[in-house]
Image (cartoon, rainbow, N blue to C red):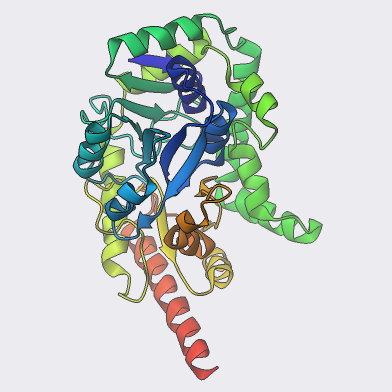
Length: 367
């Protein structure tokens, strides 16, 4: 195990330790954080997206062979929105072709005993500001090759330690996010953004992002740190006092809402296994109208709760354009399926989605 400043830092260490020749390729899940792609490209490699199967959100197995080339060095898959999919077919493919298999579990942490799928060469977990068991930063990587782990440790030892002042600033930023989550404050912020002509999602996500969008050099400067002592202490405490009951309640809440949604609503990951519903996405014909309707009823729905996005096909490889991933992310709404919400609120949430989708389809059929 290796504790890092962030998952981005961990991936940077991993790619640095691998030290692949420029021009190599990494097959990646078609939906991931853009910074992960930027880091791959920053190491002279290129990311080849593998489109997703909406029911499970796993990369389409039938596309793997087509994505393979003599330059392929690794496969990196993302376990999205708190669900897990069966890694066996992808692991078999990776072993058959001598590829490193990286599993990004930043959104799918299930507790201190969760060390990722043993079929993966590397499993990565995040404890950022909106993650399960947040420590307002930090990541843990399970690296199953001892030599690779040792190389990553040596690289990390050359990085400066995050200062206490920097970490304190992130704690204050997260406190602001917690305050915004209070319904009266959230309502005032929404009204203020409307008056100022600002997008509420952009404002809230500005508070969430640990590393705002910036150039590759600036990104590397920010992530190449070792975690500070206070961050390590808080992460240790959060893991020791893991709230298994809250995670179970979150999963139950998600399954309740999923069970109430009409069949006309696409819920990506509906067939994933071991779902804990870190995020609850639905794909609807008119996302903006649904967000407005939910906010009018007091639900802080969003189209941009997470910064993940579809991975564009690299130049010359337009055949790998992830059409299903693009379709999902262009019409997605993240529902606030929180474990603290009573069942009555969860039912109202489901009813609102059903009403809006039915209305949208009626309007579309008349048109």
